[in-house]
Length: 113
Image (cartoon, rainbow, N blue to C red; front, side, top):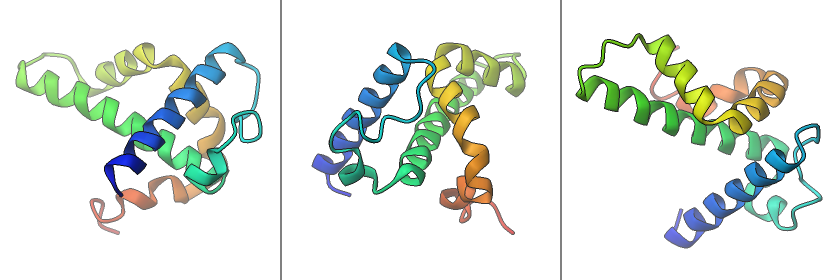
């Protein structure tokens, strides 16, 4: 992925999250935000990109807690991350179950079968 593609994906994810914040009862804005299909391919690609953003946010919180020798339990850090990213968490809670095991496919290298 080039830097331009990376920036385009991040800009598109930001737009999706802004749309979801303004329209909390809506579905993923695949037709409302032009260009999403070109960036993510389909709904599945978008949800996986949202999952990746969540994983990055959570990892940042966990690694910062470890560096600061935080006494917080990882479940507490997860809850704090969810509170800091409520729109992202709501979208994932709504759409990840439909993907089943596909939600973990990007992490198969890290998690042995």
